[in-house]
Image (cartoon, rainbow, N blue to C red):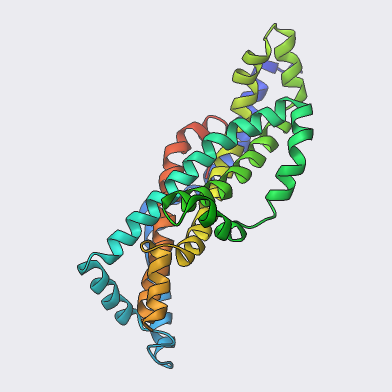
Length: 276
């Protein structure tokens, strides 16, 4: 029995994608409903537990809501969200813009990878909070120090994920491109970059999460605005409900940023068989 080899990739792709569609083929209303139900159950458990403790130790959902309304009315919450968002997006964007080319160069140029690897391996284990004092001394207590810390958090994660994507490219595809006469630039654009895109997006998402960890530490140490500063100020005034408001705002803001990133990149990733 003969087999048409031209139809094999299509059949394999169809066979592999079918289980994925079945697993993720939940109606949108069902998915939203389950998410809302989960949140409501969590709030109910929070309310029940808070009744056994003082408001200073564990404020109730209602008290936290009242604190949020208070912070919204005087503009504190909006100013804090705006300040933190600006710092995160600026530092994160700079880290991605620098990290992707560095990862590509390290993956394509072996001698450069060997030279930069000691620095990458060293600094990626040094947490950004360790550089807060130096950032303030070198760049001052203004916006530059916070953005630099976010950049530091982002660039290594993105570079390493991009490097992993380049190194994972199938050697047979590279040989085929060279055999067909593709020069290094054409090979990079047509083979390496498409294979690396999912790794870049993964690195960018991971870096976004780490950026939120960094910004809180930086704003607690040296900032007059931002969600980290809000949490620290609430601690000084013994307003635990404000602490909860700041934490919830951070979580919602991170969820929003990650959702936007997934929506923006999902169409590109689908071309390479990746779903987030």
